[in-house]
Length: 195
Image 1 (cartoon, one colour):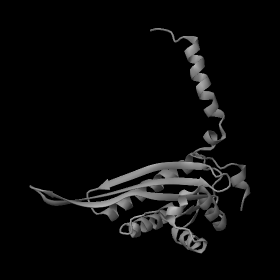
Image 2 (image 1 turned 180 degrees about the vertical axis):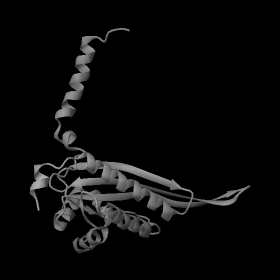
Image 3 (image 1 turned 45 degrees about the vertical axis):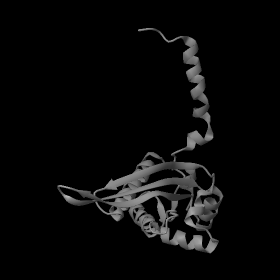
Image 4 (image 1 turned 120 degrees about the vertical axis):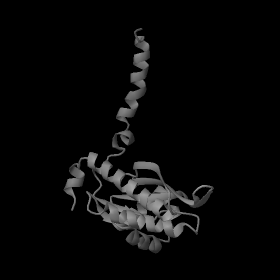
């Protein structure tokens, strides 16, 4: 086994050091300051699948209840959006998301943008017609006070059933993922000091 030249080790360490000390890198995925999480309706530009996207966000609100966060549900968030004249697709803008979160009194806002929702009927010679449903949503949690993206991920679920069950599958995965992220984030003094 050959020894790694010292200069290679130094280059690797120097490349990694800025990431260790970068404030955004240090705080990414740290949900410890988040006590109140607003769930926004999922943005969907397709009017045919928009009701399914909205019901998915409402269902996610329900699934997140009882965890570490106080949840502002998608219905209340949607009402505040109507008052501000903001559509779910506008929440791609961090400024609009922060304004929404501030108006709701939230520490962070969970937004989602539908990438794909479909239901396909597949004709199979030996089994007749099969149904496949798929839902793909790009999600993020934006901290209101710092404007940092605490989590961002595209999640997908495919099922051998209708699109509504694919969305249910997806929001269950999202709820589990958010719960896991919250569990590894230890509440800090900022979170513990607020009422």
